[in-house]
Image (cartoon, rainbow, N blue to C red; front, side, top):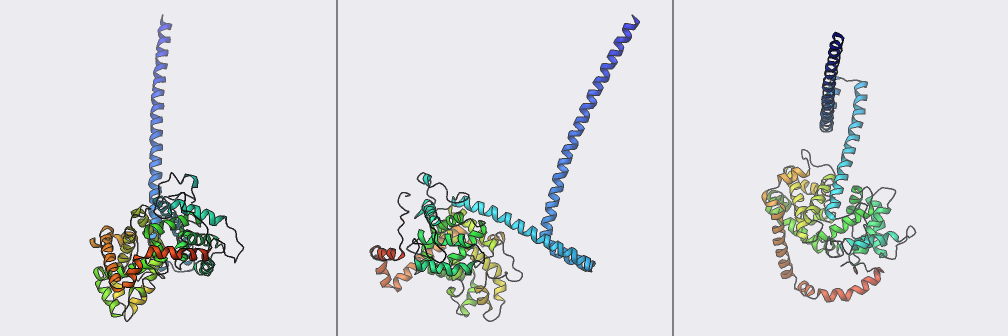
Length: 435
């Protein structure tokens, strides 16, 4: 009997030990999980701190290097600084590339361009038209046709006018120093085919080259974005031989400067500097020759976002262009007014060819934040519409012959369409089947 009680007691003690062991194991597991969670949180905090340090280095790296040189002169410090500068440059290039890739993806989304360009031509009938006129599907068909044409170097393809192709070949080497000029050539030739009645105009090469830089050389995507610009901004009227839209933009700029930048306008009037002397390239190159490269990409992205890739009214897109123009001039106005003699005119003529004026920092946030309420897009749209009406009335009153020509424009265009088409040797009907 005593042995039996001892055995039961031993079993109960064993069970208690097992229960204690299980509780200890559970506590250890909980502690381990807590430690893992704490480690993950600590790693995330370290990663965030490292990212913040990298951002601070990108912004304040130059000042920190100067501090090192001041307190630790010598060959060792200079060697450290040299490697540090190289690392900072590499980090800035990598960050810029990532930012450009993300911006290009957003631009493609706003314009309805598929990744890699082209898209499925068979599905174009069910595709919503992104713009009026030729449309995105017609642009895809044109680019597919131009890409399929193979010509020896120095010879113009039969689908592009020889005069246009000669101008394209001249501008290719002025625009880009890259060894492979084929993507730029294909984009410019495709534009000439898509808008054969307008042809090639200098300035298109600058816009196409900027688009190719953002698309990492993808000619199909770049051409489709450029075709979208044609529709939402009515670029046909900008690049046409008479350039009616360009003349309208210069007239609108002169009036808007008088309304929003009166001091700068008075200085320019004192120099007899009409907008034709300094602002023509701003509109012909779609701000590429006016703004820094990254800021021009911001302006294009905002333009496509505001228009949605649809050609509802060109004024919507041009309002974005004028807002960036007025904003950049507003940031640099004090520096421009402080220049002597004709320095303001020369600075405006070389506005985008060099660094911004000393003490002026250009970015989309500062330009948009510095805009007055009268310079917002919606308000600018109403102002641009009113200025266009005034310009049309002034032109009609000053040129009765032009008024008569405008009245008979459809008959004249049909009269001169055949000889021009025959001269260009263009036999490509891309509009049928896509409307």
